[in-house]
Image (cartoon, rainbow, N blue to C red; front, side, top):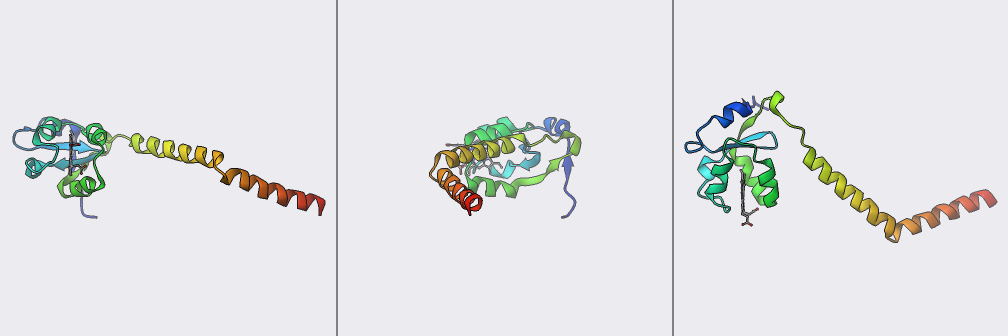
Length: 128
Ligand code: HEM
């Protein structure tokens, strides 16, 4: 990949939000200045997010897949490594859903069925 432009949180926070609306979502830097009037959520929220890390606000809204595809158009770079945060949120939610699917697996018909098959195999092995 070509050289990615790197920004620090400090320099982004010092930019003038009236001239350019630049913010961070998940360590990636976006310039949504040309998108302000098109944003279905209105331009105020974007201007308010300018210069900041908007990851939580963005996630709280529950943006659609289409919105996430669209945002790629406005990427201008990423944070310098020292300013990056670990993207824990995604992992936690992934673990949550993994734990949830495990729980439903245990309580569904699949788990007793699997145990039944295992015990049958074990018995026939021990008695055979
Ligand atoms: C590049 C960044 C962004 C893009 C491309 C984007 C795109 C969109 C799109 C396409 C929608 C329509 C609903 C959907 O498809 O999910 C939307 C709704 C919205 N967005 Fe964004 N958005 C961005 C950043 C943000 C940020 C940083 C905030 C908050 C600070 C925000 C707040 C909202 C709100 C409040 C709505 C309205 C939700 C509703 O009416 O239910 N957006 N955005």
